[in-house]
Image 1: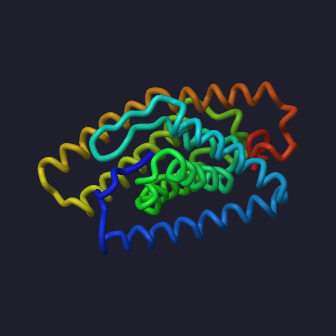
Image 2: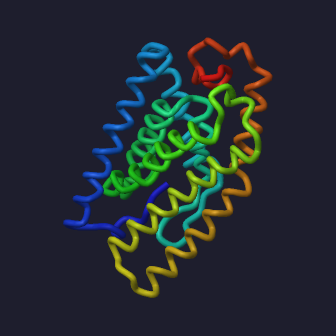
Image 3: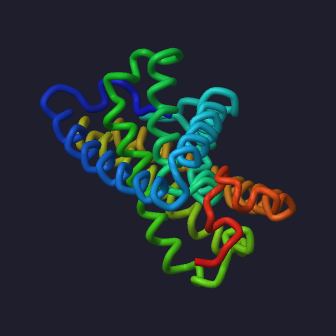
Length: 225
């Protein structure tokens, strides 16, 4: 996933450094909570799984450039529900870094922009889940409506951040706004697939109850809060 290099440049990049610092700090907090809850081996294992998944989402699954960025099946809601917020955040950040280092070097200059765009919506749905999922409900028992709300919030958050960065960096010109609009319209098509993917993965996990307690998944996957 990347916002095109040059969309934000020069002194304006300072804002992305600040937003990324905040996101990284909150991600570290989430990772620490996962460490305390299940230990270092579980955190490392789940973060590695998340990183591999994100790499597949970015580089293997279909993706295409539209407007100011690319459309990917990021499935951020899926990795959060299966692996937990901290490992999901680590996976997204490392996935961006791997993409920049080995596949799209020009993206490295925009990594703070792109990381903010993916991480802040992830943290938003982390808190949203607490409100729309009852404390006595395991993630494997989510309904389609709940998955749709979480996926919609995540994808909408990504689109909102992309739009913000594009307008912040390039202004309100007609060409720029058209590029933002085309990206947003294309990205919302992901909503046709992601909630179904969420439920399919959760259904598979429900049949694999042997994973419960292994440390390879978030404890909330099988257990009520």
